[in-house]
Length: 194
Image 1 (cartoon, helix red, strand yellow):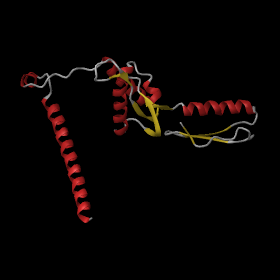
Image 2 (cartoon, one colour):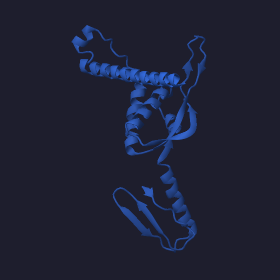
Image 3 (cartoon, helix red, strand yellow):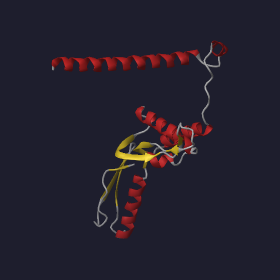
Image 4 (cartoon, one colour):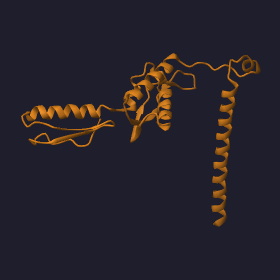
């Protein structure tokens, strides 16, 4: 529910307008209510309204497997990009992922990475999405079968899916090359003008 205005609870008569996707409700609050009851009503309404938003850093802590927090953040960003989740970046806000990364030196030293924090709207759709992603991350990584002629012929891997993935990789590589070539041409053109 989106609140179009929060009235001053000190006023004896006021109108409170609440807009929703299905209807608009306008109600008169009787002046017989005490200011204290009116204030607590609007305070609870305001808190309930504000609770509809949550930070990504707070949601990460609700994961069943915190060691997969980096994968969750990536899935979250993909869902935002695809429009499944409504979110906004919090400028300059970063948080430490709970996942412990190991250094490649082999001495057992661990470190943490930072991620950009975002504010998102908690909806029933988000809750369903989160439960699905959390269950997938809880199961762990499923090792993909190796791509051999035998595995394609046996049906262990889907050829059409592999072909689509290969097409996407080649397209991304092509676009990256085009972008780099364009940037190089612009750089050379600028240096010739000098």
